[in-house]
Length: 277
Ligand SMILES: C[S@@+](CC[C@H](N)C(=O)[O-])C[C@H]1O[C@@H](n2cnc3c(N)ncnc32)[C@H](O)[C@@H]1O
Image 1 (tube, rainbow, N blue to C red):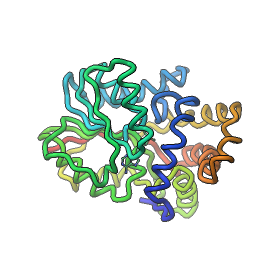
Image 2: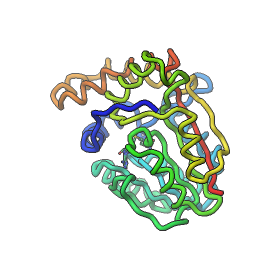
Image 3: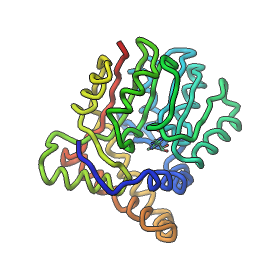
C-alpha cells in the first residue's frame, strides 16, 4: 500500500459536493471508468463496466445490495431497474445524496433505492443485512481499508458477496518512481492510500472471505482519462475550477498523472469478487 498523508475527510466530501455537477456534465451519471472491448462510446463503456462487475458478482433478482460510495446513484438505480434489487446507497456527500434520491424519484425507479449521507467508516448495519456489498471506486478514499473489509463482511449474509472495482498500486510498490507517481495521483484525487492487488486479496482473506475473482482491467479502462482530458480542454471547466479553489485545479491537473501511471505500470485497475464463507 502507498499512502498520501495530507488527505482529510473534509476535502473528500467537499470535492464531491462541488464537482458532482461537473462529473455529470462531462462524463455522465456514473463516476467511474469506462470498460472498452472495442470502440464503444464512453456512455456505453461506463455501462459495460457496471454490467461486467454485476455479472462477475452474479447479482440476482431481488437481492439486497449496499452500494458503498454510491456517487449520483448510477449503479444503485441500474441494479434496481435491471434486477429489482433493494439497494441502499451510501455517500459521504450530502449533495450526491440529494442528487441520487431526486433522480431515482424523477425516473420513477422501482424498487426505489434508499440513499444515505454517511461516512462508510463509521456507519452501522445489522449483521447479515445484505446479499451484496458493491463498491465502485470508493475504497480508494477510505482511511482504514482493512477495517472496512471486516465491517463489510459482517454486514453480508453467509455466502453474500463483496464486489469491488478499485484503482491499485502496480507491481513495484517499493520503487521510488512508483511511489512518486502514485502519491501524485492520490494527492490530486483525494485518496489517503492505494492498495496493491495483493493488499485487497489479503484484506478479503483477513475478513474471512473467499476470493472468487481477482482481475486486472487496466488496459480496458485507461482511455477514460484521454477522453476526460479532451472534454475538459474543450469546456470552460478549468476557468471555473480556478474560481472554486486550489483543490479543484489540482484535480484537473492530475489526469495526465493517472494516464502515465497506468502506462508505466505504477498503477493498475482491479476488479474483485469475494464471498463470505
Ligand atoms: C469515484 S466516486 C464513485 C461513485 C459511484 N460508485 C459510481 O461509480 O458512480 C467515489 C464515491 O465514494 C464516496 N465516498 C468517498 N469516501 C467515502 C466515505 N468515507 N463514506 C461514504 N462515501 C464515501 C464519494 O462520496 C463518492 O460518491
